[in-house]
Image: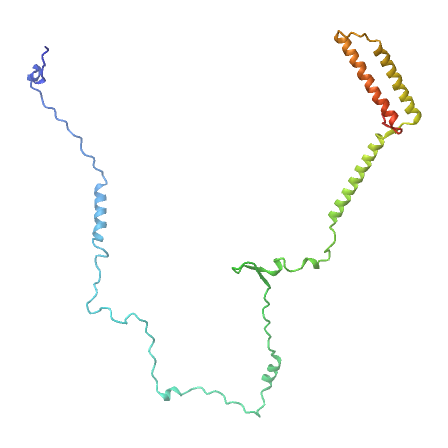
Length: 256
């Protein structure tokens, strides 16, 4: 079993040790601290309570009385009846009916003409909405002012020019189509030409039929079968052409 050694029983603990003390650095002090403290003290001493420090206190005798803040009318000057009717300057007497008026006044009276005040003419307006929005009647589109123009109802010049250009372009197109039709017109076959074509078709059919009759009865190879089918197809096509030429007397063919 292992033995447990405690630190108190160590040999090194018997040696006395010197106690080491840690010295703290001096605390930081701002060099502006005295100025800040003085400034704060001066600001607080000026207003220690609410309002200025020295205030004139109201006297108990000067309390607020009833109707003291209502406006007052200026006092009327009292005067006696005699002073009221005394007038220092007298007005001229009223002229009699028989007195003649001075010429200057008479002439001025005839020269001065009454000026007639012309009433302001209201502009007609048009109300658009139920909230009273309005605008001038002339700009509302309800006044027929465009039909009074001199060129009202006249076709504009640019429309005439456009119509002329369209007519000219259509005419050129019609001429072009007509030329194309004339170049690709159909040629009419006469009776002699129709009979010659019909005889040529019959002669070709006879040649194919003679060749078809000369084929062998046994078609055991692909070439024989293909040749036989080609002859049958050619004879069938020539028969249809012969029927067509015999049925119709008038025949047209395109020009080459």
